[in-house]
Amino acid sequence: MNTAAAAIGPETTVGELMTTDVVTLKLDDTLRLVHELMSCRRIRHFPVLDGEHLAGVVEHADLLCESVALSLARHPAESLADALDKVRVKDVIKAAPTVSSDTPIYQAARLMVERAFECLIVVEGNKLLGVVSRMDLLRELAKLQERQPMRGKRGDLCWSALA
Image (cartoon, rainbow, N blue to C red):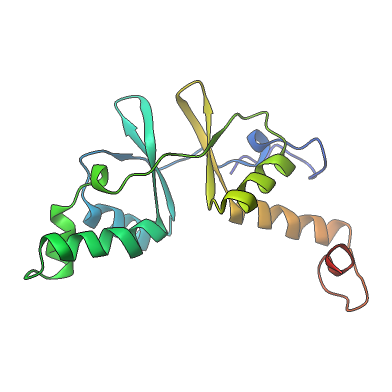
């Protein structure tokens, strides 16, 4: 994660919070590779590149839902691991929700909530710069809570803002 931002505020941008050390996939990678990366590296969102260009995204939910169903439908007699070897990222990829690095985080958060996105891919043109996830935003909210406690009736995090 980019740790340049000293404190989160209304002017904080996606570029200040995004993860820049991003693991990417290729269109011909197998779902077994995706599963292994998710398990070993604890990564839930993968931008997919077609050469140097962003082609889309594969997320944890894709692997659990669409990918497993697709694997078993195409290869019902095989084990799940063997079936995942035969299904490619290009079979389950979806359009990547993108923002620019200068997008304010409040706009990114609103977009994630309104469209139920787990992450946003940060790009300049079609060049991948990073990823900002819900977890990145929650982590920053927790830091804000530590610096400026927002206690309400119950003493819960942001209770007064939610009540």
